[in-house]
Amino acid sequence: MIVDIDLSAVRVLIIDDSRFARSFIKSALLSFGVRNVMEAGDGPAGVLLLRDTKVDLVLVDHDMEPMDGVDFTRIIRGGEEVACVDIPIVMISGMAEMEKVIEARNAGVNEFLVKPVSADSLFRRVRNALVNPKPFVRSADYAGPCRRTVDRVVPEGMERRVNPALPKPPPLVEVPAGTVQAAVRRVAKPVEPAAAKPGSGEKTSRKRFKAGTAIFSEGDSGDEAYVVETGRILIVKDVGGVKMPLGEIGPNGVFGEMALIDDHPRMAAAEAAEDSVCLVIPKAALKTQFNRTPDLVILVVETLLHDIRKMGRELVEARAKIKAKREAAGTV
Image (tube, rainbow, N blue to C red; front, side, top):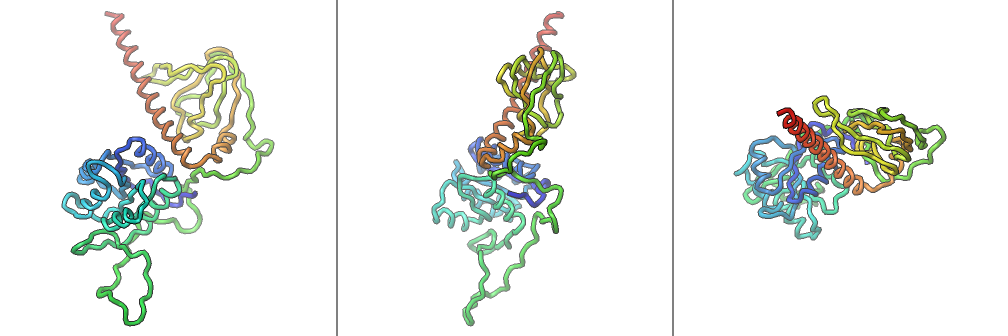
């Protein structure tokens, strides 16, 4: 799957009463290049957020309490609670029955997506809502995007349309002309990669580290992961200029893999606590294996990594506070 549009300036609101579902969808959006993602745990909270915040796209779950996605859409399209009546709405539903789809369409959704959600299907709905917006219709019994999906030539004498067709609105996101731009990112998909060639950077190796040697620093970009064969490795994080321990990796333990998977900077530093030998796994080798993994699994892993990074930061901050209190108590 190729992300061929720049979504960095798009503001997206996710409304779902499942924290995991919100985190899952957010991870997918971030992988598409979206940088502004907001969350609401139910329909009423989403309505309140739309009153005060500019949002370009809403992803709403169908089955929620106390307000489901259909009722939420009707409230938005009604225009009494919020001003953004024409905002694009993508509904995500675990029910694929035709009556549910028609109900959502008649409420005024732009796109309908059936669970389980894949990265590819989600991106196609998001892209279509932003790149190919439908004319907005206001009538006595309906407000929402035009429900015509095909503009056919009617037989002679059968035209019942009184007014001319509504003009097509401009896209909310432009598709770059010509070749793919530098901002375009490739999202991993399960393809069978070519076999590694000698010297291609996909071969593992071994490195020896003397006690006290820095293996990588916090904030570095990740290009290698490590498996400890012998020795011990300390994982430390800087807090106000003080090194705070996050953990210790012993034989058969793996470290440094997170930055290779989610392409984020190293969240902590690693140093040898004693003379150690590590198996080194290059980024290319890990990516080769990871590219065989379905998008659904990749998104779950990225969600878990996001939570692990967050917990790591909270843990080291808590340890720093405890250490400071103990030191203060010792000086009294």
